[in-house]
Length: 407
Image 1 (cartoon, rainbow, N blue to C red):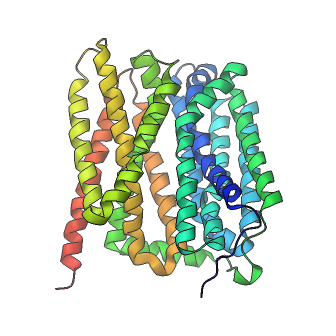
Image 2: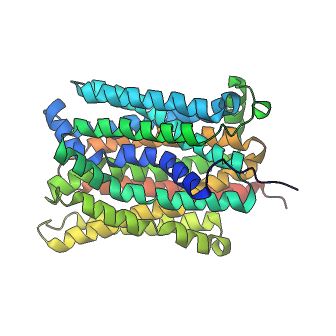
């Protein structure tokens, strides 16, 4: 009989703590968006578009950190890895606060991303340590439900911080958020991983897991499709603020619109949960991408319509919502598809897969963001192209699986 090992704190507090750890990523990205124009004007006045690299540099750091934080927490314990990650995160935030050049901020944001990978990955491991079965699924669902609210309100919070201080205040808020999270965890949560259950960190195991994943066709193609889907998400995130400000002259209302879109798109997970059992993961992803290609193709055709027409803005908001909604219907399913044949190395595979797709997507989205020319053409074109690539990848996966399926 499997017995659930309870944490030394009430379940509601535990869920809130885990949700706060998850929220580190969303807060670090989305609260940054309203500050990008001011940072660009202050530190890169000749090329304001370069301020978008503040988002992608963080994502790259986070992706690299994802490679190691899971295995390191298996070797040294959950809390020590989170402590070190928080220290790196706060060091990067403070360096950004005092920086006098965009290059310094970009380096500091990579450091923040490396640190933020710890709560992102280790929080999931902590839930797995303390709960099993349906209890674990319920805890994760509730924590993720709270987490989905953070991207909706983060730009609004970022705007409020800028209003009472300046763009540097955002970085101080990041450091404060991390310190509060770590203090809460340090005081209220006992180390969940017993020393007898720890496994030594061995780099050859990571390399072996990477090699096995690359050799498996379904896993390889799923990671590729994930990369393209995340590229669409990152393309929207890094370009959305300048589009609202420059193209539609709605900089002041941007946080509110972002909140509305995020809340609407958050329902995608509920739709996926109700349909995936009947439709299937692969078909669900393929259909979602097909619809996105049609929507983005129509949106690309509308780029020739004068933007003075107010209806064009509302159509753009609907399209933006569709991209976020599509991400909610694809990433979870693609992750599950890739993990199906990797059950024997699940933890290592999750770290490797998350790192590859995140870093690759950031590297693809970054040059697309730098193409911003005062129109939505680069954004819509970038999303359309990557949606087509993801769709082709899913068709390719289906054919490969038919070929290797037993007769």
